[in-house]
Every structure is written in C-alpha cells, then in structure tokens.
Figure 1 (cartoon, rainbow, N blue to C red):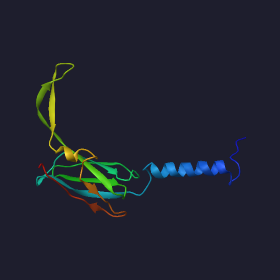
Figure 2 (spheres, rainbow, N blue to C red):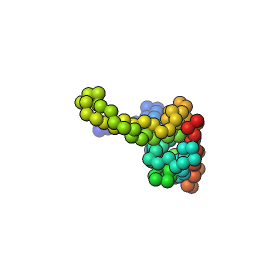
Figure 3 (cartoon, rainbow, N blue to C red):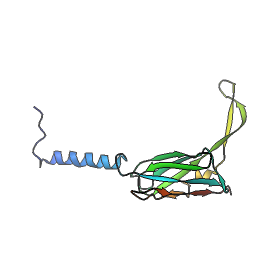
Figure 4 (cartoon, one colour):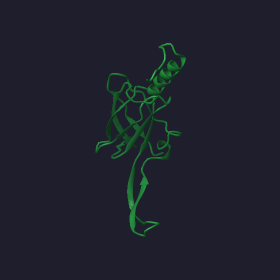
Length: 142
C-alpha cells in the first residue's frame, strides 16, 4: 500500500510546494493576452519577419509571431514585460554548399543586428491582462 503520510507531513508539504513552484515557473497554463501590431523598418512594413518575445523576468510564456504582407502580427503572450527580438532575411543570390557543392540560397539579414538579440534589442512589450494590446515597432537601419 502506498502512503503519503499525514497532511502535515513535512516531506509531503515540501513536495507540494516544489510542484506548485514548478507549475508557476513553467510558463504554461498562466494568464494569456493578445498582442497585435505592425513592424516597420525605416517607415516601410517589414514583411515575413519573425518576432520572438521572452519574459524579461524569466516567468511567463515565450511567444512567437510572423508578420504578414502589411507588416502586421498577432500572437498570445503572458501579461508580463517582454523583450522582443525581430529577425528577417532575404535571399541574396546563391552560393555553393560547402559540403555537397550544390548551389544553395545565400541569405542576409535585413534587420540591424541590435534587434536580433535579447542582449542588445531595445524593443519591449507590456501586454495588458484580459485585453488586446497593440504594440507597434518602428525599427531603423541606422
């Protein structure tokens, strides 16, 4: 017979507290809200960009969105302060693959490096719990 001890058993209480902490820090099942907006680079819609949103404090859900033909995006996220990384590339010709020698697409980033890392991005979002939050991002190449 399996026994978990009395409800006041210290080992049981520690296990319950540990599981509660793991659940709260896992980032799933918590409150979610909708973020929407437009991403522009030098005033023009940034088409096909990927936005990665990470909770600044480390608690909450990581969210990803992709911009459409008008530079618009929409995603769900935890209602916490988020660090936002924007990545976008274009095909810029072809180069030989170093292993097979076959021609492959050469891609280059169209977004300045500072927006592509959580260490350097100045972009943040602070969605409001229970409502759609609009956050537009105006990136500059300079």
